Amino acid sequence: MNIVELKNVNKNYPAFRLQDVSFALEEGRITGFIGRNGAGKTTTIKSMLNLIHTDSGEVSYFGLPLLQNESEIKKRIGYSTGTVSWYPRKTIREITEVTKSFYPGWDEEAYRKYLALFGLEESKKPIELSEGMKVKFNLLLALSHRAEVLILDEPTSGLDPFSRDELLGLFTTLKSHGVTIFFSTHITSDLERCADDIVYISHGRIKAACSKADFLRDCGKEGETLEEVFLRLEREAAE
Amino acid sequence: MKALIKKELRLSASVLAYIFIAFGLMALIPGYPILCSVFFITLGLFQSFQYAREANDTVFTALLPVAKHDVVKGRFLFTVFIELCGFLLMAAMTLIRMTLLADSVIYRHNALMNANPFFLGMALLLFGLFNLIFVGGFFKTAYNFAKPFVTHIIVCFLLIGVAETLHHIPGLQALNAFGFEHPVLQFSLFLAGLLAYVLLTLLSYNKACKDFEKIDL
Image (cartoon, rainbow over all chains, first blue to last red; front, side, top):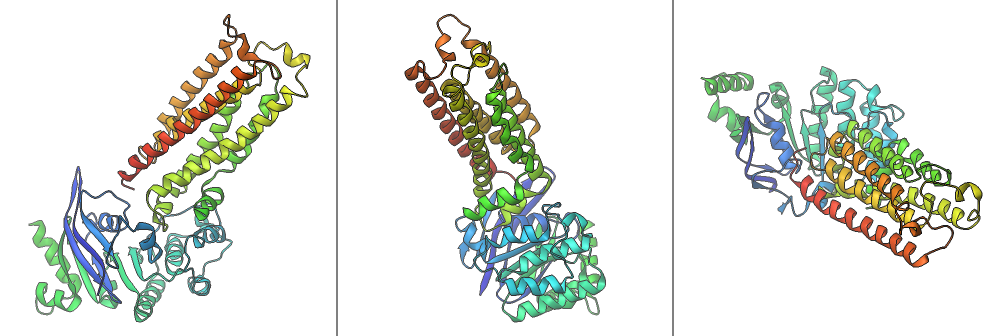
């Protein structure tokens, strides 16, 4: 079943165009969203969260259009963006106290578990956190309200190899609980490690949206790794 | 709604917005343009908008399980809350001046505006204009507040100047009533100010919702 669906999403900026972006995410699968810097990953994710005003197209979750069901849908999804610092001078405790009142499904047990797993202290303020710890704090909020879908913009950026490994392992655990995960990255080893499906974007257009195996079969050449396939595709597109 | 207000009060607000409510006490200062208290209360609100912007509050709120226009609603509710707190303080001081201190020499020999219902009506008009010019102006971009605030300063002080001048014009002395003199005129002007506040705030809110919907965060 398709949990998230984008149909012909278009967004024009003076120097960039997101063109007819369409793909779907299946329930309980991990999808890696890959593309080079400036390819349109963040713009696509922002359109999936109604943070930008798209020119046309439709985004739906659980079969419901996002625009007409925004607050209900957002209760069921979690979002995290890399290293953005929310309320840098408030403590994690204060931010969490307020955030959890928005989610009827807030899971205090999960919150405590991830707090310990990520090594975060509630008395700390985002301004006191390293870039990697900021990522973990954003993930903590996204993971603590029983979200059915997680949309993560470069969740592994700034993380040390050990934390990255832990996080990708966590993705697999969440998937086994039926959570659908969509994460953008430009690190192909993240995809090798845990992605079931791949959505590949280049110059604002979706070039592939399929399972990892199908992607390698259809776009790759014999003996090529994922990284080599992407590098070749990007080079070919630039020529 | 409750969660949204809690977020505005606990995360988005600058402590100065709360402290500056105390400027409502300025209504007691003799020989001072007491409408300036409105400006100082709005200055606290300006600080709060600045603080919220630096804390990435707009995007954080837009990502919460609320509709995009609820970001605007939350900020307007907070603004109106602070303004009404300041206004209630000004109203309480005005009432003291109208009753206990109605015959006080220090207030009677005052070339400037007296604290009376007309003053309160003017205060509400100024708050309403702040909501229209500054709060509404901010939501055109959700980041630029310099131009709306400078415009607010100019309009605010021009109107304070006008309000301070009116009662010196022959025939308009009743605007500067002491105690409960000229009750019909005074309370009519207060109600006109209240109506202006409600209308300007609603107008600004509706426009801000429409503007904000089009903004890319």
